[in-house]
Length: 53
Image 1 (tube, rainbow, N blue to C red):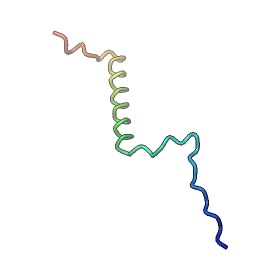
Image 2 (image 1 turned 60 degrees about the vertical axis):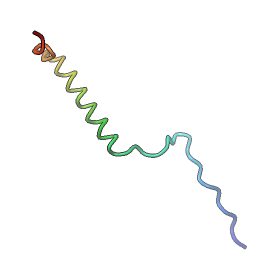
Image 3 (image 1 turned 135 degrees about the vertical axis):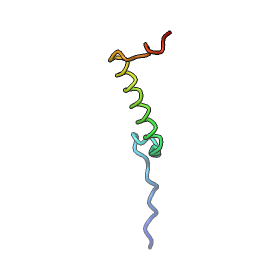
Image 4 (image 1 turned 60 degrees about the horizontal axis):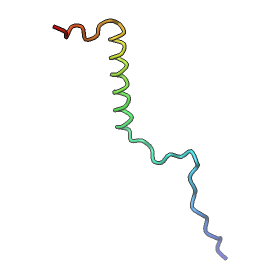
């Protein structure tokens, strides 16, 4: 006699779905790096002062 079929695997409660694509991670990393650079430049005093008339 054949064994009873196994039930399909259930997801863990913490599983949020499929993995994030690599291009999204790269885009977010670049955006965060630019944001940090922007903040550092402004805190260092090199802000938008050169653009004023």
